[in-house]
Length: 239
Image (cartoon, rainbow, N blue to C red):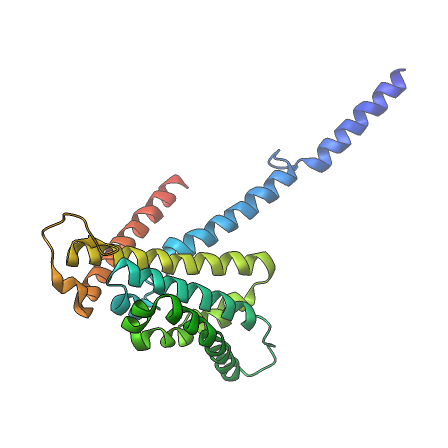
């Protein structure tokens, strides 16, 4: 009986040794989970906040500045950008890396153009006023940096779930910025929300113009940069 007890104790210790890290005493499964969770959190923070494609990188600020003068316009812009970018980048991930760099960029833009054609027809059918108001800036989304350079240097260097999550976070980061700019400009320029009066009387019609779009987007960019610095300092102090 004593030998059997000793064998059981040895077996339990062996299992504990394989399941627990020798240095930290933390189960290996939990360590892997925490590590994966940290990477996913960083991806989400980068797409929404730290590397926001509009308010931090400024890579796709043009369509937002010109088109997002109301919430309705911003919403249609987000729908077009989201569908166009997601489908185009996912299809571009199949482009072979053996092609020359310059040729790959052309192929990415060609794929985006082919995707844009049916999307534009659907948009013109369901949102004719907004589609006409945004004019040439919707087709210009086919050559945005998210579809060209970011696809080459960021998305195509990832695979599987990581590619999906990273792309989704960057797209939602653009949507967040566009909707925020559209909300502020419509409220302050027209005193409305989706065309309905809000009772806000101190309107500034100049914010509905392109210079007004530069002003609002620039102020939001300054706020995002300031918050980014504060979060970084807070993280360094905590470390």
